[in-house]
Amino acid sequence: MTKIMTARRNGPRRAAGLLALIVPALLLSGCTGNAPAPSASPSGEAWTSGFVAAAATETAPLTGLTVAAGSSAHPSLAAKVDNHVAARPQVAIDRTDLVFEELVEGGITRYVAVWQSGIPDQVGPLRSIRPMDPDIIAPFGGLVAYSGGQQRFVDGMNATGQISAIFDYDTTGLFSRSKATAAPHNVILAATEFVNRNASVAPPAQQYAYAATIAGASAVVDGAPISVINTRFSNSSARSWTWNADAGAYLRTQDGAPDLTPEGAQLKATNVVVLRVNVTVDQSIPKTELIASGDASISSGGKTIAATWSKDSQTAPIRLVDGNGVTIRLAPGNTWFQLVPNGTGSVDLVP
Image (cartoon, rainbow, N blue to C red):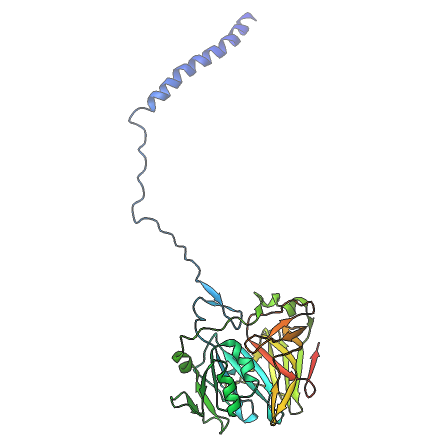
């Protein structure tokens, strides 16, 4: 019993003695030349980052779409485009940013078509100016082209400060006559050439509010599902827009038939804005009164919201607000404005 107790007492002492011998040995071995040498740095070129910064972008002023920075640094081009049955299909009407459809003589319609985000080589057929066109075009502050018109209407357009190309007076080769249609429905403008000649003219200011996506548009957020928008300008001019989810747009028909491009594609719009307007007549010429206000409906993404439109002056853009006075946000993309007369016109929204 005594021997066992002695051994137990001596165990910790022996362990401490062994550690006292081992630790100095380890410290000595760390000081010898037998330690492995540090590895050399990899040879080759210095490391460089592969990060590429995203290209700078901006918002196209007449569509709300995100585009490459600097790509909008040119003026807008407005043109008075014929919509007589003999003028269809029109050249490059499918590439517009904005289209305003208006009533003219005989119950038919014409377009004020506006290009800015992309300028086609040619547009047309062009026809003569009408009294409401300066009020439509003045806010863009760019270029305008038309075939001619009564001197009082030409003077009114010139007073807006737009740079005009007029077929009846042009001697610079900007216009030609197409063989696809017969006169007077065949005046074609060299659109790219016209814009290039005036490249220093400033781009237009943004005219309307846009959501970042279709899902954020006011009509989609607060509107009611509407699948078909039927508008009538007169007894002889019926228009219809049908929501197509696959295309993500409204497809257009005119007078009961699909409205087509020269290539056979159906015209479409991201936004359809219907304005109820008063129309006055002076010397047999209808004038859509736009320095005014009235009821409107705005359709985007298969839904429609009731709204009010107003325009305070010739140079002011058309303002669109909802029932609470909040500015309407359009979906990013192209927009067609239907200026439907009170009285002779009608609007039918079909769920």
